[in-house]
Length: 446
Image 1 (cartoon, rainbow, N blue to C red):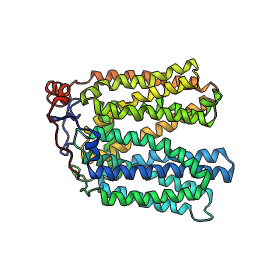
Image 2: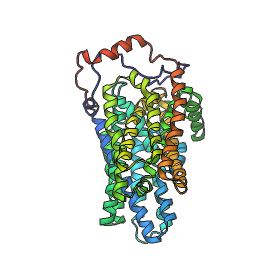
Image 3: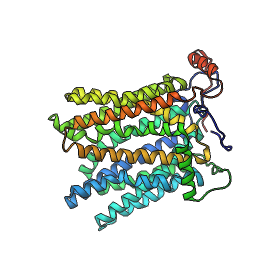
Image 4: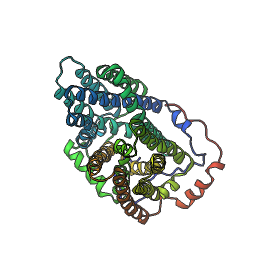
């Protein structure tokens, strides 16, 4: 990552390509770094706790109020506050030490969830507290995403990104299923207590497992929060390559619509909760299997070349649901579609390599906010559309629209400078021969 003032670069120049003659690193090399192991474990704990709290509190609100609207407002806490937190709080990851931001967010969230456990807290107050908890997620995510690049060299970073993305998908599916089970057996309050405990554990793991690093030094001094937001917007939206890469990431709003419609989709096929759960599970399973393979088996240049076509396939495959396939075929289509979502690793890696270290947190915050809010809006629109047309048609339309947008983005990406780094020809030759090189020593734990 560059820490000096930026200079004009060709569209691909910021993408790191290893110049090492060594073998391509493995996931073992990534987990050999002690800091990453600690960060990964904290992510699993807090992510699972988040799902547990969200589902449990939604059940509690509905049980007390019998209001679908209030239940929906509660569940929307997973999306709505992220926009404001991503825009106005993610910059904390650039103004303060990133480890301090993560630990502070964990401790504050523990206190907020603990306040929900106080007897007699009104429902409105509990929902408000949950929204504030979610508001603190973007600065935590921005700090975590930025510090992962600090831990990793250019070779290992894509693998680390693949681990985080795969873990995120697994946590959402397994955590949501476990949350419903725990909430049904133990009740919402014990589930909230578990969530508070996970934040404590996460904060302690980060505090003692992640090395302290100084605040990234911005050129010209630290701007105000609004000034930092304006700089981040100019940086991300003013660079054609960054705009394209971010838009490729935001395509998730189109190809993840099947997850938002899993229940009505399964219902139209005569299935119940089990069928809906299977549709959700296989969607995530496709990406969980393909993403690690894509990242470890293909070199950086190949990943960049295939990024556009894979984005098109991820959305386009869903258009087949216009034929109203049965449950088994639908499961196969959803799994295949999400398998090609492995292109997100290449987009994420290329994005982060173009961002100066001192602006990385704000840039990640804007990108993540757009992604999360886009998914929430897409789910809402898809749900409204499914009131008047079959869910399979809504999924097909979403996939078709996404594929058309992906075609335009792929053409833009292909039309940019084909150079990746400075010695393209030499790197192309190296990528083909990486597996024949002398192995490097195992990664040293930090």
